[in-house]
Length: 395
Image (tube, rainbow, N blue to C red; front, top):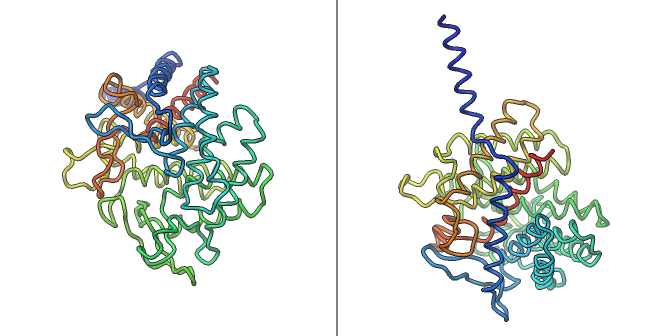
């Protein structure tokens, strides 16, 4: 009798853990919301540059607009390409083309920083994937060559901030840079040189070795000696401190190593993606939306970061398809759906507060900027995650 009761209890717990569920109709409702918000934003875009939406400050309703040089400039055209993918509306294609083309100079001038993947692959990369326009492909290939100029063979990584070498005291590499490797991998397989993939692989392997502590928590910045490549120090820039778990940084790691496994099929990347994921999931609050830094002493009164949740949700949906352990794969998918459910609630959707998709992201907390704000990269990864979930559900 006791065994039967225990078994029943386990079944109930298992059933609870498999919630929340989502179906295609629910995902479509959220995508329709995103389309409506984006259409409102398009009506607010200025006729002159700067005209690329970046953020809406907490409590505000007006977008701050930036030009093509801003590291976030590729997310808005990326959002529009995703909306075109889902709706096939010509307006979204035309606007995605317009805002993508504004970024063209980045493929024709020396690298200002490492963010070319965020800027050019989200825009022209998605554009080429959806339209096959050879002009878009050419821009991605040229952008990849520009990004490759930041690679330091001695250190084995791509320089993140050329303008900050003196400040940090050497060749600096930030965890965000993992996301830019996707463009290099794609370029190497689509007409670019093989060395682009070699650079991406070196960067991922070196970062895996040096960027994380023994608990698989990433540091924001690792500084290497520019001449010898020797690791000098591991420090933060946007996290709470050098040893804390900065939420968005950990989400970049989850996303980046999942992507590198897809691109290389190297088992060590799949194993590592799970390790950086598990420490993140273990420390999440009940609603699955992280505080901006897991070690902020003001929790539960610290700001949340919806952008980290959106990045992680998108990554987990992909990771769940690669993991061989079915129980763990199911957990990842369930957690991703839970994150999307919460992000889609009245607590996190912007709705009539402003024309972004989401509220409550944190940009640069130590600098006091974009705290509890709507930020364009949160919207980008939110709609990406919704589209990934839709594809999983219709299989």
